[in-house]
Length: 245
Image (cartoon, rainbow, N blue to C red):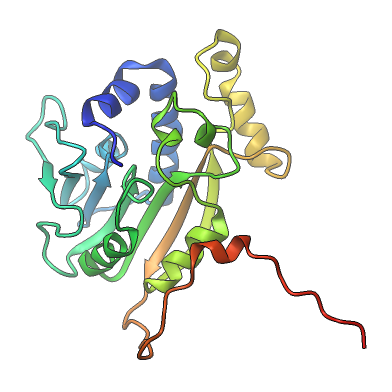
C-alpha cells in the first residue's frame, strides 16, 4: 500500500525529523554519484527530496510518482519535472536512464517483481540504481511515525537476492538513520552523534534505512524454462543439519 503523497510531503518538508532524514539520505546519494554531468537521473516513488542536487549538472531529471500515491509539482520555484505514472509502465524510453533512485516505491509495491523489471528496462547498459528501503532490523521499520514504518522491510541479503534475480548486480550497501525515530529534543540534538557511531561500528546498532547500490547486468542471464524466483521466505527457513558419520 502506497502512502499518500501529501503525508510524504509533510514528513520530508514540514517535520523536523523528516528534514533531518532527508538530509542524511540525500547527502549519501550525492556522495555516491558526485558527478552526473550529461546523465539522465530518475527518481521513483517519493525520491524527489533526494534529486535536487542533480538539477544543476544533469542532462535531465525526472521524478516519477505512482498513481496510488499521487503526485505533487516539484521542484518548488522551478519548472516541474514530476510525473504521475503507472507503477509498472513508466513513460520513459527503454535504456535511456543513467542513474535511478527508488525510495518509498519498492517496499510499498503490490508487485515488486514487475516493478524491478521496469527498473531494469529503463536503465541503460552500465546504469546504476539506488534502492532505499526500511531495514527490517532497525527501529524505523517498527514505528508508524515515519514513512519507513509502512510496507515490507528488507534485510540486506533479502534485497540483494531479489535484485540479483532481476539481473541487477549489487555492488555495496550501507545503513543510515541510526537515531531513534523520535522528535524528542534529546534524540534530535544528538542525531549526528548516533549517525557517526552507527556507521563506525554498525554491529552495535541497526540503521533504520538500508541503501543498496546495484548495476544493470547486460545482457541479462538466460533463465531456464519453469525456473522460479527464490521465495523471500527462504531466508527464514531452517538450514538442514548434517548427520554425524
